[in-house]
Length: 183
Image (cartoon, rainbow, N blue to C red; front, side, top):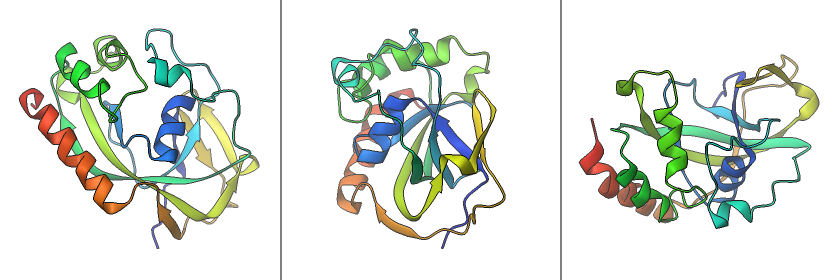
């Protein structure tokens, strides 16, 4: 049984929806996170600098869960060069198809992090048996939620969101697409 971090992996509703329904398994990042982590949703709307694709705009973004029951575990980290051609390739597939290519490109181009920190993380998302109510989660800042001490972070995985065969096919597809852009 994994023990999850008290820090939550806070993200926008489109990414949360796709990660928890098996529609994607990657995330753009610039810092290390203490995986495994409970997935939660930011309150603020999606940044307009990060345009959604038609598929992304069609997601149900009006509802917010009353509880959280999905965790993300880190499988692999890929340090990349930020190149619009990389994002055109990735966003034209089911790997990151909810975004227009300029969204992940802008994510890195507009951030204050050093270019050597740009990374794509491959995540294994699982539903857990335990349910963490909103009342057990508090906001630390715009980028971080935390689970209060009343919730037992020793959790049991119920099932993987993406089955093994499909997950490793996505991993192979990702590695093939990003190979020319690795640092």
